Image (cartoon, rainbow, N blue to C red; front, side, top):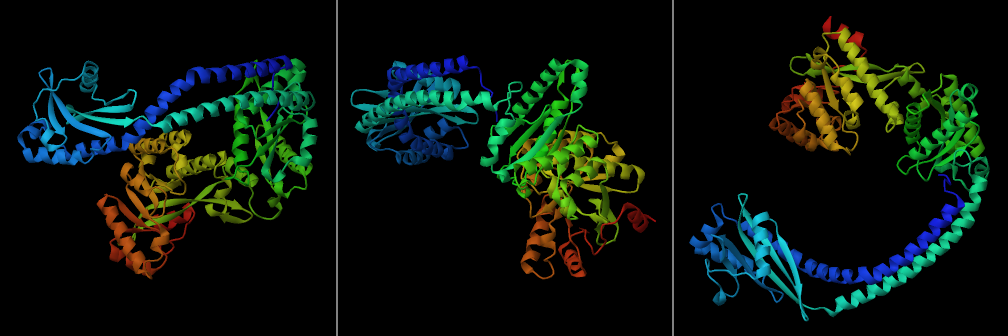
Length: 632
């Protein structure tokens, strides 16, 4: 991002300190860490080689726990005792010498079950006398209900003993003791020896690398800092920009040009020293909110050029709009000596269509001019598609911010009575003489701040419609990310009770959920407030069954891609039949989407689906036509 390093003495101090620290670290590893590593590795190897057996023993115990009291069962039921002993004896081997269960009675420990050769078994009830150290361990297991593991070794063997609590109905009934022993493995010692050699070599390499890095740092960074870094703000200067022309892959970046609004007035009113501090503060905000792979360049007096690296998942750079909005918000909320500061940003998303970096910056500058000319404190996007008749991100942004989004409505019909259950609100924008549906524009704003503003505009539009038409019941489509947005949820919760009772929320399954808990909590808040939830596209979404089990939805909309196939496909007919049965078992009301002809309608009657929606009943219509058609 920038070469915001400290002065030469501090840098050399840290380099020398790093060298000494590396040397001390190597000595510390060899003298202190390696002996501990040797012991730990030995214990880990032993533990790893036994853990699968122990887990299997635990499962065997859990599977064979009786419904009645374990101790009583073992004493009174010889068949159960023999069966449990037989199940556990499977795990005996040369390394696992014995397994037995003990229980506590009047302060003394007694055998409950001894798993060994049949002739050598100790019968239940015999006194168990632990060693002094072992008694503390067993007591801890009984007190804490937590297993304990002890690793012990002598000259020729390494052993590990597991003390496992056997818990029944929340109470510890017994402790299972399993003891493994291993002959000391020469390969362990050989492995530790090799690790010692590797660590010593690594330590030497680290010292060499730090020394080389210190030299390279001084030569390639420290000296260049004076040439390429703006001394006031600590970001790159125009000289560095000149060096980027030949090396920069322009297709991999989005160009942002940021200008501090009314900066000349600040300088004239408060003086150049205050102006300089404001520039340093703006530069700091940029550095704190951008990534190391992005470039920040002081392009002019109060202008900053940002080259924002495109991500693999966002090759068109739409994420840059989100970043730009965030930067403006940070600047807007930052005050220096109670001076309100704002900025304007012009964005060029179409760098691949620019001749070179100069041309790309020029197009961003055109967008910046538009931002400043439109009132400042805003983001504008340059788009060559404005001349091709297609809606651009810049045009869409203007439509949303100026609240020119509207909705048409399509009824959900009771197919038996022909009466509407409610009307789904479908967004429309007016562009070049046509009303465009969401598929024509919504992808442009997904993943940006504009999408949240778009949802807000839809909600506000429908709240006003419901206020003006008390006979209407309406649903609006919302994505999972809308329900995670607290501002959106608060807007819905602020509506009055009458509006809430007439506004259904359709959850679109068009994206994966990354914060399911927040989604679930906010949906439950809305349900408690009185909203009815409709799950859209059931049968084709990402997380249908999460929703169904955790969210109290009233209705499930069967996906149109399935419903369309009903007249011609027995396979889809059977699938729909099962989906309908599933909905009814879950207490949900199914609604069929894309009811386009009489063949589909007849299939719905046969399947017992009560509600449908589609062109067979009505195309989406403006609200005045809906009122005229259904309520006049």
